[in-house]
Amino acid sequence: MSRKHITLAVISIILLGMNTTPLSLSQITIYDSSFPLEQGKSIRWETINATEAPYTDFPYIRFRVNDLYNDTWYDGYNSLIVNATIEFYHNFGWVAEFENSFYLAYNYSRNYLNWSEIAYLHALPLIVPTPVNLTLIGDAIENLGILNYSYIGSTLLLDYQNTTTVEITYNSKGISTIIEKVTNMTTMYRWELVESEVVVVIPFTNYFIVATIIASISLIWFEIKVKKNHFKQKKFKIN
Image (cartoon, rainbow, N blue to C red; front, side, top):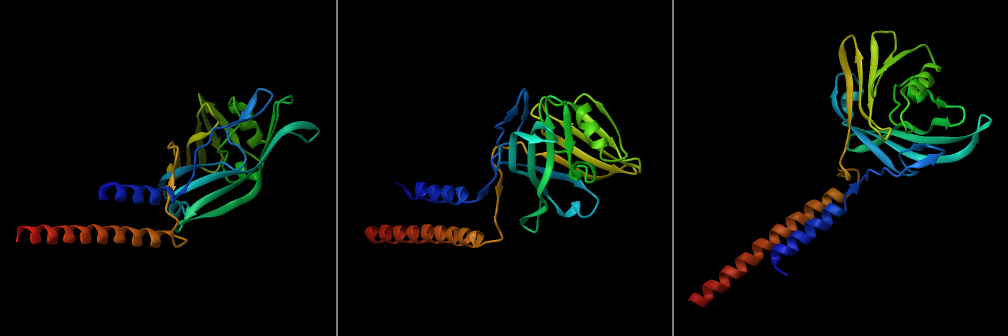
């Protein structure tokens, strides 16, 4: 194996050692309705624009499914129940804002969707069961407080009646592709779904970055040393 191939192999190993977040779209189904993420899976959004603290300090938002109970008894009916954690990426690490929180319960036979305060008070209905029913989603959030809602196509508009609106666009998988909060005609934050299959996050919170730098420097030093030895041998043969 050539030196070039050895270098590429080591770099590949380094990249594979980084933290990754796979975008899993495996579904848990109750009757003809599905929730797009399995237990233990996560998905994230990138902050494209933010003018309101603390969102200005969060480049990424992540939704992680901790527990998903399929066809479980809830409120007198078998339901699909989701327990989740919503995290923000801050100072090179994930910080749990809502940890192990009840997220939603859905019952097919009653056509009923129950949201926790995460969805209403914090305007975070990030993922919904499919097929997407915007009327059902709006009603569920509205039932938690005084709120108007409307929708056009696959976009849901939540009106908090205090010059603040939240606009959410969902794809066919029930995942929000864009979520934007506007107050007094100014965007407070705009999040867009990260579509890539693998997201690389450099874990600055441990020693991995140090090992990566040392490995890279070692590779460069090795290449220089080999080239010097090769040059000396070539020069000696010429003499």
